[in-house]
Length: 296
View 1 (cartoon, rainbow, N blue to C red):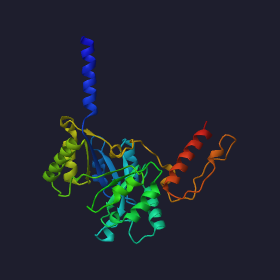
View 2 (view 1 turned 30 degrees about the horizontal axis):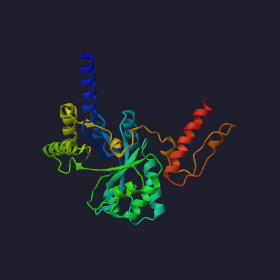
View 3 (view 1 turned 180 degrees about the vertical axis):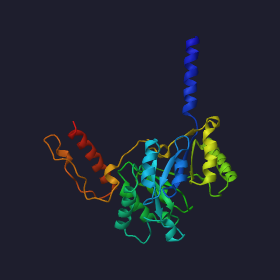
């Protein structure tokens, strides 16, 4: 009888653990400021990070984030109602053709080592453009990349378009630091917990700001008492948080990936032209498999 009760107790505790509300926290704008970026990387738990392309510290810090087992995203600059200069390098705009948009997204993705997904930086104009969002999602469809809609406009069609095309995706629930004060960030963190408890999960986006980091350092260290689970943002999209090394994708765009000479048992290792990002992903995996065979 005692043994049976003990087993039931363990089962109950296991079920309770599985049923914990989930929160994900995504830190945007990584790559420009090294000291604040390093402080953000030191946050406790499965915090996720989005790196601006072509910034001074993004490649090195993305590698650090991956080494810590954290989700690494491209923070893709997209056209907004603000000045084009504010978007930074690699901006995706409504003035681009389909080929230009696809190529720029591919270049941006290749600039971030270990990239697993992407979200929009700004984008209040581009994310309202259904046709151009379709082109972007068609570029990554078939790869393991996921998408996070930062929801910088209530008129965004990015999330439904990503889901329509089968790209794993999720939308932001709150910004932690739209008001840059510790009190405001703390109140937004409470809102995050409330949404998660009501719905089962919630996603917050923050930035590497001093007030934001001060609050997160405090709240994440005490998260156990809140009875919620901090998870990688990829988990909310349906993707498993897997470390993916796009070794062949982190340099300039290429037509095909080099492989070692074929042997009788390695005919599948011949180079194949790459037309979109999902092709680069498949080619990278083929290269890694062929290298493994060649090293046996």
